[in-house]
Image 1 (cartoon, chains in turn purple, orange):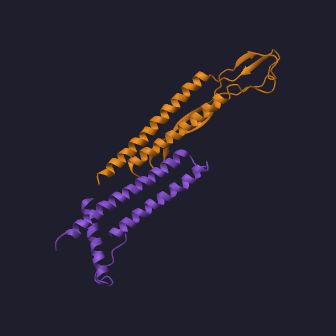
Image 2 (cartoon, one colour):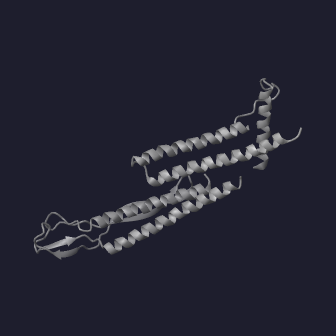
Length: 106
Length: 136
């Protein structure tokens, strides 16, 4: 976990550095697949969390209308909350690592 | 799926089953005085729920489901009340085989089981939260 987050932080740093140079990624280096970069990681997991949140919202509306089982509504909201908490916790951790690297004297 | 999420989902099945059980108990309680309308007819017959364990394929765990509600086939009580429209030739009216005391006990049991399952949800939620705390 710690190793991979550091690697992600490094790759995030690299992508920032690349965009700062204002040119397209060099041809010799293959484009990084989505999901391996930090941005991809956050986007992927966030999309999943948002998806769960949407599902829970849908179920809550149904629950208010009296169509869905109360326990299903509670479970869906709970799942969405868990997913979001996980994403936020991982993001915070990785950003902390990234900031540590930025603070490094060059 | 994470085991802790599975645990709370299994518990939610238990809560559903107990909720259904309470619904049946309330049916019995509400119909404790529901007599027949035709002479010699049958009054309300008490309902019972039966549970079964079922394999939930996407989680690969066994959850509880209500198998079906069955009728309690025990004998009805009789009351002598010749003026009632449901009275038979001898003047007796059949009463539902619902005993409120038993229903109250059933209700309590459903409540306790529901609470136990709810506790599983609370605990697993707490454990997930505590685990995430490790990242902070």
